[in-house]
Length: 154
Image 1 (cartoon, rainbow, N blue to C red):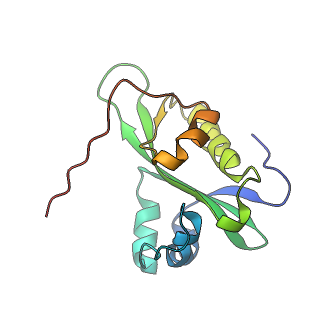
Image 2: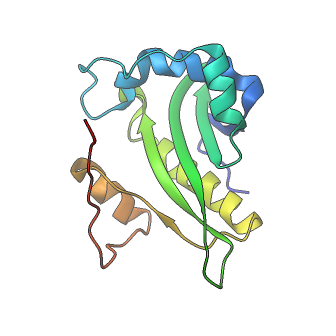
């Protein structure tokens, strides 16, 4: 298993770690491109437990000195076609503004990839924000043939 650089550790969290997810939700703006935006909102401890208990959710935290300094959230997408049983959708990832450029993002990606290898998942895809494309390319991601389209229902 990859060893993260000194100063922090990466671990996968589950329902027993609901408090960590609640705390992250209150400050997740500090992990975004613009930390001046408002946090995404609150989540109840029960909501956090149910989210982390979902068998399709994989959530990793990078921590240093009892503080969350990075996170990565994926969803398992089961496949209906022959070949690998599933692929991952990397939903969101962030590094605390004060901890950037210390290898945290790469360590989170490495932890996700180690999980993928252990579980026979051969592909991960990410609908990357424009500002994050360079990071993902440095981590070995490549542009696919399609486009990601979004439709919001009102």
